[in-house]
Amino acid sequence: MMTQRRINSLIKQLFAILFLVFMLLPFFLVLINALKPRIEIIKNPMALPHALSLANFTKAWVTMKFGTVLMNTAYITAFSQILLIVFGAMLSYMLVRWDFKANKIIFTVLICAMIIPFQSLMIPFVSIFGKLGLMNSRTALIFFYMGFGMPMTTFMYHGFMKGISREMEEAALIDGCSHFYCFWKIVFPNLKPITTTILIVNILWIWNDFLLPSLVLIKDKNRTIPLSTFYFFGEYTAELGLAMAALILSVLPVVVIYLFLQKQIVTGVMDGAIK
Amino acid sequence: MYKEKSNLKSFQVFATFGLIPLLVFGIVVLIPFFSGLFLSLTNWNGSLDGKIEFIGIGNYISAVRDPAFWGSLGKTFYYVFFVMILTNTSAFLFGLLVTSGMKGQNFYRAGYFTPNLIGGVILGYIWQFIFSRVFVYFGTKTGIPFFEISWLTQPHAALWALIIVGVWQNAGYMMLIYIAGFVGIDKSLIEAARMDGASPLQMLQKIKIPMMVPAFTITLFLTLRKAFMVYDVNLSLTKGGPYNTTELISMHVYNEAFLNQNMGPGQAKAFLLFLLVAVIAVAQVAVLKKKEVDAI
Image (cartoon, rainbow over all chains, first blue to last red; front, top):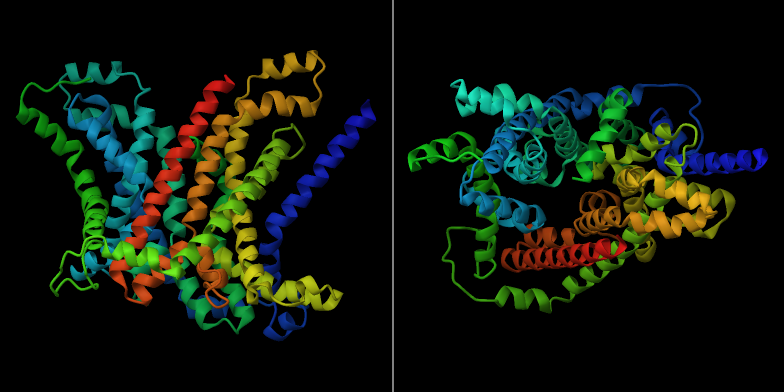
């Protein structure tokens, strides 16, 4: 009986490791090649590097202007999050707490909008906002993210808010609080669990998004990580070591954060997915 | 529910809480959506200066008559079909494994999820290197012809390269949904079945899978959507090549509009894509919702 159990758990571990190798080996292969000069990569892309050299990384960092790119990505992601959280929470508060006739219609329209693929909007999107001169600006991109992210954010807040008791806020209202003040002082702090979930889901989306910024940010001083990787790879595809180092650099920020917040991120995404 | 006594009061509440987000949503999503619908019915060529004439469903007819559209759609269906099956099979297995109470299951969960943290463009480039360098090196060293020629230079193999990356990318995400499903199964059901002497396979078949129907609803819907809309990986891994044989539908729409400058037909195709996705999504959710009730 005991041995049977042992064998079972051994088999499970074996499979788990096998799957893990399949999931992570690509990253490992890119990493070891990022440490090698080009000739060594061509000779044998599966070998470990002879000597540890960070030359590819420093060169990739400088040519990609990785510092600027990182700042751009962080800036765009951060401001989009703030706007989405602030306005998504307020909108869902109105939709849940008031008996306006339009609320049902607004909510239905938001739900329907979640099905629309971006590809169905991008052509008129480019021609309208291009004509208005709103391209090439990080501020415009943040504004667009606010619009595109609003349905999902509101939807998630909406579901959570329905389950929150109204006693506290009603007491505050009787004491003469305004609705606005009452929302931020009393309701919003209670939304913390769902706010965390929404933040994780939206950060992963905006940080990694490619198609929208590729249409909006054309000048290289504004580029985000996925964009600059794209342009860099197009240009330096023959310089294998450099290209590999660029890939590692682009992956690194998220992976470092993941090492620390692994549990929060996994549960956050899990909660977000089943909402 | 709060009630406002006067219209003015109602408007004040609306202006405070709803006006700004709805305005931005309207500008960014609704205006492009409806102008897209309108423009697909005109002879618009991308500029707003020229005279725009209403031509009815002309663009839709030329879209439907375009063999490249059907070719791309056919390949997309092939891709979606296999990505859906393989992603969900592996995600289900992953989920089963890491909820079985094995050692280090949180570690494995985190590991399997890793590709989801990274954007499709970067993932595509990582695999481009694997397929065109590592595989080919492995093939020439071992003499296995299957790997000797880069998959990315052969039409059918390149499509399968996309499928493999699609599965690899999405499996960890879907696994999380299956984990939530497995964890949510009532322990007393499992215990009762064990008392009755059910084998692990019977338990899987009679209890776990039926109880997982809600999870399947979500995962199938999400994989379908993600697979249909795939663009980033397609762009960085194969760029539609070799010879446009792996140009999936999103890329096809993009190229039609922005490379070939066929705005009208491109927009018509984009709307057909939207309709397709909407119909499939609604149908699937309806069917699975019905099953859910039967299972209980």
